[in-house]
Image (cartoon, rainbow, N blue to C red; front, side):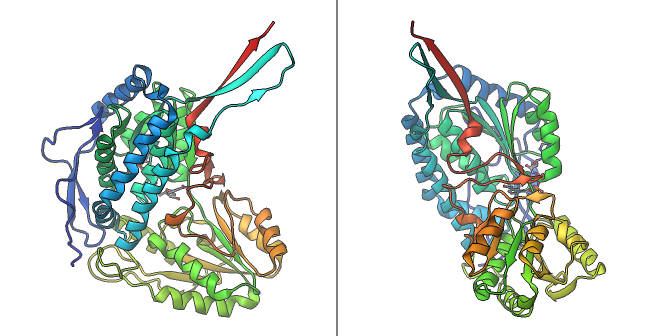
Length: 487
Ligand code: NAD
């Protein structure tokens, strides 16, 4: 195999609107392989005309078809077929995610399986979510109905293209919404392939629309008053802009934004397990994960043992061929992103961080960066605060439980975290003390294994709302109160 391994043949490469792919009129934007820096494929991006057509189609499918009124189990049957369709083309999806997204194929395959699990979960969810009856005395009957929100726009970033699209589309379809999904312009291929799977699974025309495109399309979707809600995953700065644009039409907004997550490691923890988990969390997907725990807060007495175990495990990661199951570290998404990560490392070192391992941009093709660990990073160091979104972790010492909690909370973000200690009372006190949407005690599944059953999302500037689990359905449903006078 070679780093120029090619994509599956006949992949769709144009916007998908109202049940059809736009004709390829030639040309389009060139996608670059992160493994080689060379051209990989051409995709026709959507613009204002395709956005207008998609909004119109999604509106019609919601307002003038049976889709929102189907028995939930009927929509569920379609979702089951989407899950089966993903698995039937698992090798194609994994190759696309590997080659377009810069992921080693083993991780890409776990994401494909995870995407199918999400559709299966929501296939069976919607007939178990219903309203309440509210006691108002003998003369009144009051109950609530859960109704679909309407037309939703969904914007996803490049780091988990298929998984991100699935987390958004599956609950929206289960709830009876119609959707316009915008993948990131660097990684649109798996969402377009998913459109093909949706069509084959019997999703009616206009219910799912996929618009590969950039910020211009994102702004149109955030602003358009015909869209009832927007679910955005991406950076905190763009999330704030989406919220501003959505405000004009009082659109419902869900935001999954950045993170600068802490792992709190006490000296009595299983240090080998904590170090292995730090590698999986900090360097999985080359660190390009919102929930990467890039701040290792370590009790001072454990710093030598933890640093040695962490560095040794990090140095075992191997780059190689994208489709080789033995490859465990892929490149960063783009040349520009790699340069930004390298600049952040330089800034951190200039501010006093000590290099434990990594830190040097390798020569050769592709946008690779080595797993990098920075030691002696205090709260004043930029590495303590900046979400680098690359394979860079920092180690910060603490002395007491109270100091560990204060350091963990010393961030504008509040997405994820973990605590490691054999003293379960202490571990749970810390878990309660940190202001994050998620926290793991003595272990955490990798991002691709994140439980589909549990809510995913953040406090503070990490976002608003929750994806996954039944919580995700809160965004995609309106609640109608019906009161009946029985007299
Ligand atoms: P980004 O904010 O630059 O882009 C995200 C998406 O928004 C892309 O599809 C992009 O085309 C679109 N976009 C860009 N400008 C826009 C605008 N003005 N209006 C509307 N849409 C616009 O983020 P990125 O660099 O692609 O992704 C990395 C960021 O995503 C990180 O901050 C990471 O933490 C975050 N992220 C968060 C989660 C989560 O669940 N909390 C998951 C993955 C990534």
